[in-house]
Length: 457
Image 1 (cartoon, rainbow, N blue to C red):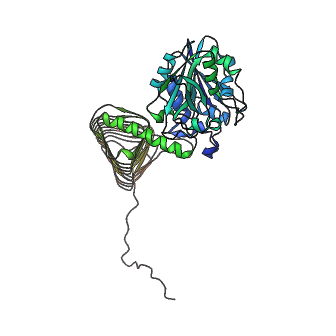
Image 2 (image 1 turned 90 degrees about the horizontal axis):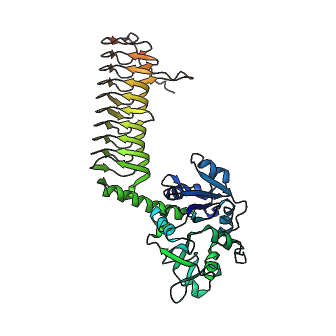
Image 3 (image 1 turned 90 degrees about the vertical axis):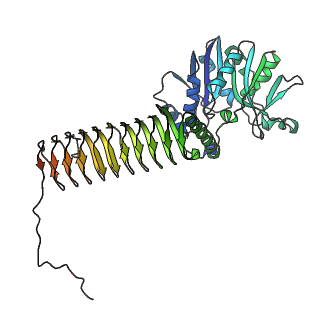
């Protein structure tokens, strides 16, 4: 049967105390719903429906870049059964329906495969979990033979049922034909006045449909997010899993509790070392023997072999060649591309530049919209004046050029190969190759000058 995944994402999440819809709160830098969507998308032959409601425009906007999502609006939030029922008019039998939740972000594709492989026209597959403290969850009620009889929500449970620690995760796989029939029979005569999806379990039992349960041993993959405490708890668990995977691939992490991975890390080598309080977001590619110092932030960065990122540096959308040294306190902005053996020193900011082999920008400089050749030395306090208030202009510096300290290069301007720019110059015209170019006022000294003195009161 064709698979249809229904992700319920209509709830407000009042306990988050936020104007942001709950499913858009970030875990590891991505919305909760995005994690669920990724797990669902990994399943083959799958149509994905997202049931949205509260903050619907925000939710849809956040996923505007995603293709092949079917959006279904739940105008009133009347329970999980009511939410799933909104999708039924769009389903074509025969189909298998997998129900997921936009606030249960760590569900794994492997677990979902087990469910959908077990479900068919004669079997409903249900995911459960055993909790030490099952408070708040619907309990799985079984007969003396261990077969599932029904699910009882906590508010409907008596003291005996509340002692059961096997609980419902809400994640099921079921035939669309059965689901369509059962949901028409579900009533809202309960403490919440809602239509519970869980009520279909008893209806399935009455029709002698087999209820096959799978109990996950990884509790965190089925935990929902209802408040910011729970969100922080899952964030730490997720980060621990990510960091452990890196270490198993040969990365030395000096303090695993102080590395955050908010995206994907692609290791292209071995013997990488990462110091404390590092954030890796987006897609980062890291070569062999790379060292990343404390308090660095890397976003969409490629680091070749033997790169050293010194502490307190920020790199974004940057490509760094072999053997480069960056920082400390360097900021490499989008479009920075460094060849091998380049040095970007402390308090240097770059943006949209290419830098050739062995060049150095060591101190306190801003270099933007520039093409820099090989073996160039750029002195402290140099800036490229690349913006005229309306347009950006390019600076070109040839191989082997030497730019003296406190130089302003007013773009568009070209410094020829082997040229020297004298310290303290403002360069507004092209500087010829292999020549000294400078612009300075004459230095004057006054022999009889007296420093002003403060007048006595």
